[in-house]
Length: 147
Image (cartoon, rainbow, N blue to C red):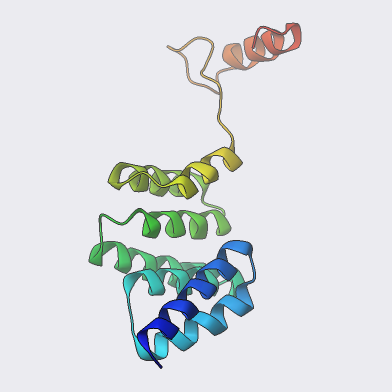
């Protein structure tokens, strides 16, 4: 297969994965993986592994290896964050997204943050967010429209 055909298949696989067509993405990316291995390809294959087969732990491990090979590529952090969200670890996913934004700006990471939603700051900053006073004040201010 020519390099142009491989690039085309890679692009089709990435588009399919981004749209949620995991089986199609696995087929396209698998064909590319037979010819060449790149950290980007490994990350997307890991995402397909997590999303399609539920093997989140091994998928996260593959993404972390890709991050070691290309620490400046925010795509790996994006995919790692998505895998961590699939496994239910929202805190670690947010950390991965933040590390990705620190390495380089990525609009897909910003979209993930928008999907997660932003929390408003605590009313009384010296208290923890889940302190009863902050919770009650937040609800009251929300009801009267000041929050």
